[in-house]
Length: 108
Image 1: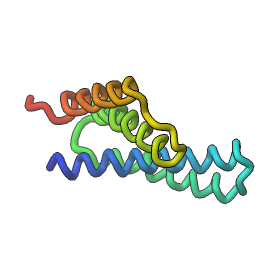
Image 2 (image 1 turned 45 degrees about the horizontal axis):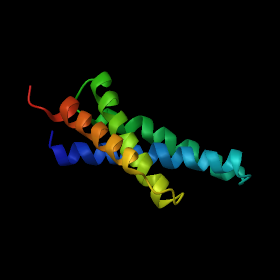
Image 3 (image 1 turned 90 degrees about the vertical axis):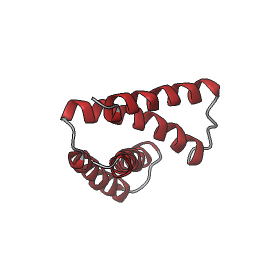
Image 4 (image 1 turned 45 degrees about the vertical axis):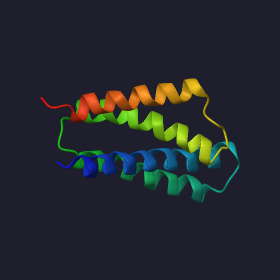
């Protein structure tokens, strides 16, 4: 599978997981309407489907996805919650992305 296509699936899955979870967070923690929770649940369902489009085994895909999730969560926090990542967040995010490359894309 093309690395760009695979990376796109990871990013889309991450946005669905974080976005869906965020909508449920808003519903339960910020007293938004139940429609936030319902829409969040639908988006989380999509998150569960998208990784199945990856060519690798379940364990490998979800292990690599963990690194993508870390990086996207930091970016989400920075863009949406206005929490600027510090140097340790950035280092950790880069380490996690290095893990993604090794797990998912390193030649075997």
